[in-house]
Image 1 (cartoon, helix red, strand yellow):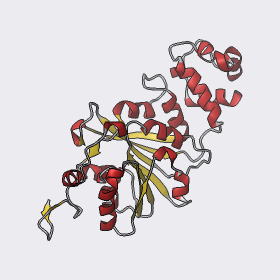
Image 2 (image 1 turned 180 degrees about the vertical axis):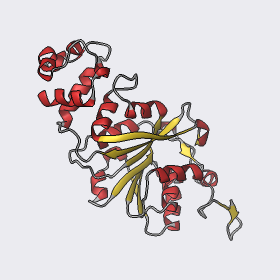
Image 3 (image 1 turned 30 degrees about the horizontal axis):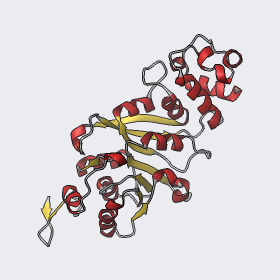
Image 4 (image 1 turned 135 degrees about the vertical axis):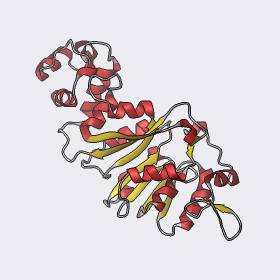
Length: 283
C-alpha cells in the first residue's frame, strides 16, 4: 500500500484499495445477485495467472463487481477485458478502472444470460475468466459447454465455483460427484481444479470453500448431438439411484441399452463419457 499524490492510499496497481472503492460507491454485496467480492489483489492475480498468457487475448469477465479480478487481469497483461455487469451500482467503480487502463477495458451493462458471447469474441483469441455469481454460474457453464460451433469461441475458461460444483465439473465415473456436469465437461474439455479459495477471502464470506477450475476445449471431442446427449444425461441422472433400464425408460430403455451394448442393470454414475455419447448417437 502506498500514498497517491493527493494523499489517498493506493493498491499495488496504483488504484484505491477495493475496500475504499466499495465504501465510496456503497457497493455492499447483494445476495439476490449472487455477489461475493474478492478484495485481495494477490489472490485475484493468482486467478489471472491461472488463465495463462493473456497478452494477445480478449478476456471476457462476467460479474466483475467493484473490479478486483478485472484489475488483476489488466495488471497481469490482458490485452483487452470485456466486463459484463448487471449491477448498475458497480459501473462507476469499473469506469475508474477503465480510465486507469485506457483502451483496454470495455464495460457492458447487462445480464450475462442474455449476452451473445461469440459476438463479443468476434473471431479473435478469447478466453473467459470470472468469479461467477453463484446463482447463474452452473447455467452459464452448461451454455458454454454446449455451444453449437466447436471448437468454441474461447480457448480456455478459468472460473470460480463453490467447491461442491467444482468437484462435479471434474468428476470421473464411479465417483459420488459424477453427473451431468461431469459428462458434459469431460466430453468437450479437459478440466482440472487449479486451487481452492477460503471463505474469508470474500466479502461477505460465503459458508463454503470455493475453487478455481480451468477448462481447455478438446479439439476433437467424440461426435454427438448436444441436445440428444443432454436428454440422455438428464434422464439417466434424474433417477440416478435406479437401474438404467428404468431411468432411461422414457427414451428407449431396454432397446436403447441393448443397441449400445450396455447392461441395463447398471446405474448412471458407472457409465463413461464414451458410453453416454454412444447412447446419444443411438437415440
